[in-house]
Image (cartoon, rainbow, N blue to C red; front, top):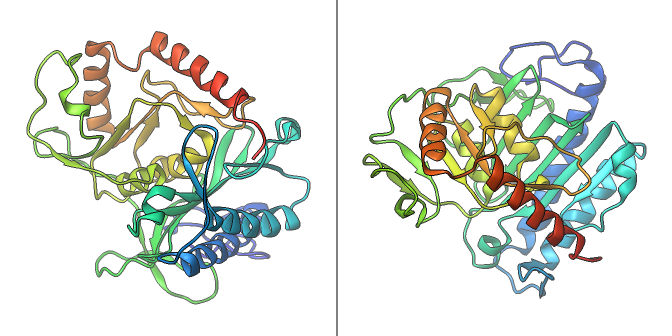
Length: 323
């Protein structure tokens, strides 16, 4: 991945395709902003920080706001004509008229951050006409940085692992990264699923699930990124999510050869008036089909449920107020 400002024709990821000039410049900008925001949050990690409760009862800390300030200053300072959507900023409807929109979650996994667990990330994407074109999910504690460019592949940088190489760093350091590939497993038996504790025990299932290894990660963006990296076969969450949770991570899975959708199979679209998504399923192609079959048989994640979840999510969004 050698994308950078002024790098006409540079490879964005995995040598798969040349990076268009505008995306190369925006990728360099996004990478620098996310790394700086991650460093700012990491400086507060493990230290006493101010914490407040949002209207929905979730926690927000001074680290969330500090990382958000970095991202907004860097990204909107350089691209004032783009739209902006962040978990930690008041929504500005002007974004709906913009073709390009930054969608960010300054700290995805605030609960883990506050409790000293490493399962939190800085997640940021550039969306064009409702679809992500650039993605970055960065775990400052582990140093893992997942990157993707639409049509040009996805890579992992900073992982302390030996093995396949093929992504060249795009910031001038020349460090190699690992191309992201979803798992090719075609059977659920033995699969690693990142799902909530009660997911496999729901009464709606028509039959028992095969033997699987259940994993859990607090950050939804990190969960989906781990699926893109092949470290888990799938993740499923049937509860409503926000656009900033998934804008970046969804592109990682797609560019790694996987499929991501809501529970009904509908594609995820972004920069909507009410930026909420009903659910998410992310997996390699073979297991995706099997998971969707089970969801359909159980009557979970279907169009009716999706409409009801979206309605509830929209009402919650309207009531969230200024933050």
